[in-house]
Length: 237
Image (cartoon, rainbow, N blue to C red):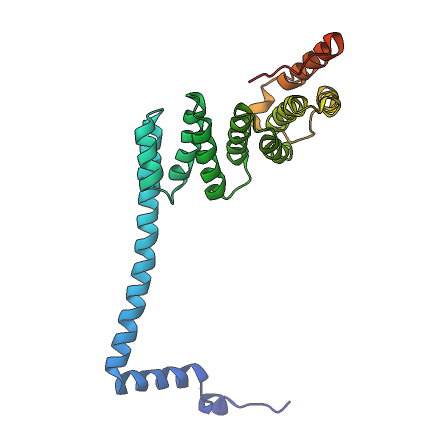
């Protein structure tokens, strides 16, 4: 490769300097257009910054109100309406479903839990709590088929407690709808299954194993009653 002398290097045009010079000349020849473009960039940047500030402020306000509301249904409804796009606003729908269920308004519980499920957007423990409230509300209204659809979804939960609860309730619904053999089979499966292998949280390390779960014990009790007297599965709500 031919040697390049220092003089040649000094005479070589720097592309960055050339480009910068062209930009400077364009700005000089088009001051109004440059000013308009600069203002547009500033407005957009300021708008984005303002949006995130407003969003975080709303999240904070909604969460504070939600925490202080406790079981005040009116306040919780206001949060769900005024802060519908915040986490606390969506959680308010789950709380309203719970409050509706507790006072026997099962249709209201279904309505609020459906809205929560649609808006929450995550298949986490709260999502499955909403599904469970919806399922049990259908059970109370004797809507067995609808309850079983929701319970099947809960059986797929990563939460062992929710999964076992759903299995037990599904057995009661199968039994109530005349499918006793399927109910017994599900109860047997629940009563004998082994705990899921999972990484324990720090909070679980101090909590000793209690053997079978509450719903496994209920399943065993229900099976005993069925075998002894041919009766129905006990409802543990």
